[in-house]
Every structure is written in structure tokens, then in C-alpha cells.
Image (cartoon, rainbow, N blue to C red):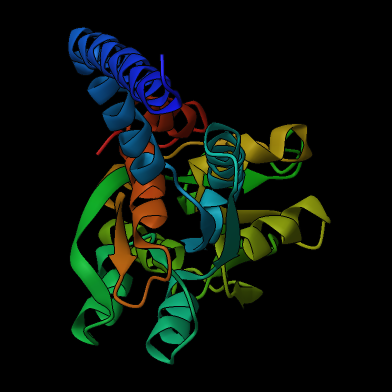
Length: 275
């Protein structure tokens, strides 16, 4: 056999083997195309569903314990994310947001303070009420002054603190006092509910009108006295995504956690009422 003939025969053998391999590969690909396509699709979906970035949440002071816990849960469920909080009086937080402070989510202790943000056009979408909160009297441990009612706080010998009237807990307390036709002169007005509670914890005041959730969070540092007038001054807590949110999907996912059954369980165990 000539050199040319041997070369042509070798080419035909290689070409045939290549064709056979191509057919086999094609058959394998065809039989597993659904699985391969599905896997690729799943990987793509997983990539698109992966959350990242930092979510900055401005939230009413009374949400501190519950939201801190939910933030930790969120970070564990979504590695690569971080939730940072700024807690305080809702009116001050609203003013900061409308003043340009960077934030992604706002959770307010009243619709009135939320309206400051929505009226300024800084909310994205419509705020949704996610919990409600009711007032309670915080006393010194063991209630040594025998406080049993809202009227008892009018005793001039008692040092009582209230939240500022512009703050949701202060507005609610004033509403309860007005409904009862009671006049109360506190020794101080505090900028948020935690500050009011701290006065009692430090024994700088004998009592404070705060939220049930704050009395609950304080444990044995204070006593708690419920009063019927609080039923007429229950605060709705709305939450919203903010217009200039940097990580929208992550911020929305945090709001979804707050509103989920898991989130509601954390909040109700802290003393909040369901919306």
C-alpha cells in the first residue's frame, strides 16, 4: 500500500471515530437535556435569589429587642447580608429620613409619624401595619408606691415621667389621660420610650407610662401595672421600604421577615399585639 493510500485510510478511521463519538455525545446530551437544563436553570435562580448588602433600618425605640433578634435571624438565613439599626423616637427618625439620612427601611410607632415620611415622598409604596402596641405603667420593682391605676400617677408625691407629646408613646399617654379627664404633671418629658423607662430603672423616677413591650423587655428591673384606659390608646406600627434604598431586594426581604409568621412570633412573644 502506497504512503498516500495509508494516509487516506487513517483519515477515514479518525473521522469515523470522531463521528461515532459525536453521535454518542449527542445521544447522551439528548437523553439528559431536561436534567442539564433544569440544573442550569436552578443555578441561575439560586444566583438571582441570593441576597447581599447592608440594610439600614430606622425603627421606633420600642422595637429594639425584637428587631435586633430578627436582624440576627435574617443574617443567619442570608449569609453575606448585614442589618444595621438606628433606634429612637419615631418623630426624630422621620425628620432624619426627610432630611436625607441614608436608610432603607422605616418602622414607626404610629401612622402620624410615618405620614411625615410619606408626605415628603420618601417612602416607596404604601406603608403596612405589622404590629400594634399598648401602654402600661412601669413602676419601681415590687411597686413600693402601690400604683394601681392611671389616676394614682396624679399623686404629687410621685415622680412620674412621660414620653414627649410628639413621640408616639407620649401622644398615646396623653390620649389616655384626656379620655380619663386626668391632669398629670411629669417631672420630665423624654425623647423616646426607652429613655422614659430608663428613668425608672435608675430609680430617678417612681413611675413612667411606657409600652407593655418595654416593661416586658426590662424584666425584673421594673414592675408593670396595666390600666383599662390604655385600650383606647393603642398604637399601630407601620413599616415601609424607603425610596432611596440601596439594596432593594434585601430590604424587601427583611420587611417580609418582619411580617412573616416567624417574625410575628418574635414580636408577639415580646408583647406586641397582632395588626
